[in-house]
Structure formats: C-alpha cells, structure tokens
Length: 102
Image (cartoon, rainbow, N blue to C red):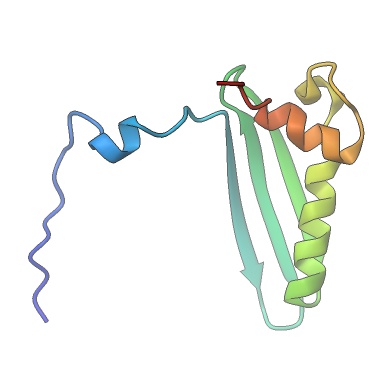
C-alpha cells in the first residue's frame, strides 16, 4: 500500500490546534521491559514556568507500573506546586492550573 502523505514543514498550526487551550504541562515517559520487570522513566515540565522534574516507576505488571507511575506524579516537589494545595490531588491541580470561569 502506497502512502500518499509526505512529510512537510508547517509554518502555522492547523486551525483545530489554534482553538485548543494553551499547553500548561508536558509529560514524557519512556517505558522499558524485558518481560519480568518494567521501568518507566520520564519528566514532567511546567510549560509556563519552565520547571522540570524527573519521574521514575517500577513494576512487575502493567497495573503495578501504572500505580507506581501515578504515585510518583502525586509526589511532585513542592517547588513545582507553587504554594498551592500540597495534597496529592492538589499537586496535580497545581501543575495543571485552575479552570477559568467564562
């Protein structure tokens, strides 16, 4: 099957992307596995302030890895939370920001 879509340099974001809200955080995770253990390593970046934090999780099953990864996200350093609610739930909210009222 021939692929007719060739890569091209885009000078302006598509209209659909222009209507989306701004990026406030980035999460990049690399997952490695040999069948007996799985390791996830990555980084979280606060796009508005440029703060970056490394994350790492280990698990022997996909469910254990997901739980460990979620736990590592809830333990973000207080510096990234910017003085907001320091509970686990508040930490994620602090990173993502608050919804603006219309």
